[in-house]
Length: 407
Image (cartoon, rainbow, N blue to C red; front, side):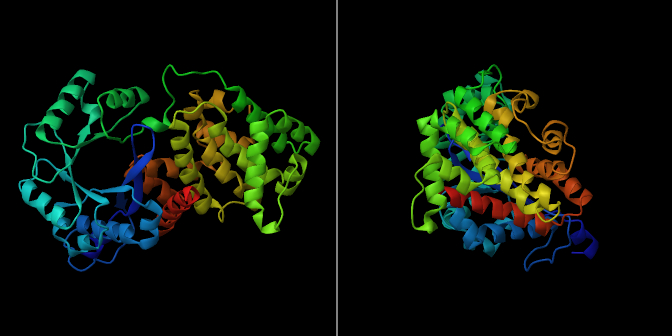
């Protein structure tokens, strides 16, 4: 491959979660693109194969696999990569390889993947076709159909022999509800991070209480004033003591009082904990948990990437902005209304509302990585002098860290 072609090869890791019908993260689809020069690996004959081999190497990483556990990993590979011996290194039974239904050798490719104990995932194109043996997964682009046509197509694919249907390109909560009623198995798209249309716009009393505490922590209010609010809510007090005693178990003794807990924790860690608590303060149907998981990856990614680039007094805001960037979807409110009750610094408000200020580049980059927007990732990284290795490492480490919290 000519050096100038290799230099143009993109390789930024981007991801999109796969959720089940209860909003639980069942897996991820990963893609890898980069603008940095890469060494052409053995057996690679074009740009797509170079990209794919770097993607496979990322998935094979043992720490990465340990973090993902039993979750499904989807890979979109070039046809020539399907002959690559590196596929044999992928963990059996957990990796799905997407195959366009238009492939001339679809049945042979499916058989090869099954032989390697990988999962063929057929991308439906709406045409009439026959399902190769051993193919349990079919992905359907839900954005191409209205509800009636989607139901008809899903029924057709079930009759064809599909055991598991993935609804791809689910762009709203309404579309997600339609797909759930049609009994799809997995759901993929931007629906999770968007406010629900016509949802409940009233702030839950629990959320309002946490916001009140957030403001007091931001103002460095007297401990006894904050302690009084905690004591009004036994569940909130229990959560604080449970968290503190878990974090402080190295002390060799437990912390029994709210006042002692607040003094031990300190204002900044308390603010960070309360920000996370917003996602469990109100009523939840599983969506809040999924939003929190995504917010944690986003926040940690921003922190990993920007902590050493911002002034020390601003670094701590990266995590907070990342978490609060899902507050509109959590509360089903425009962002301006969602953060109105919070006494946020101007730098945070600018990032959340108008995409400006010191936190904005990291927030924009995190969103682009989640939305499969390769061009945006490339442009943002280039504009701020971030290499592919830096972005990818920050991304992978954020994902590993967030998964480790559940463990």
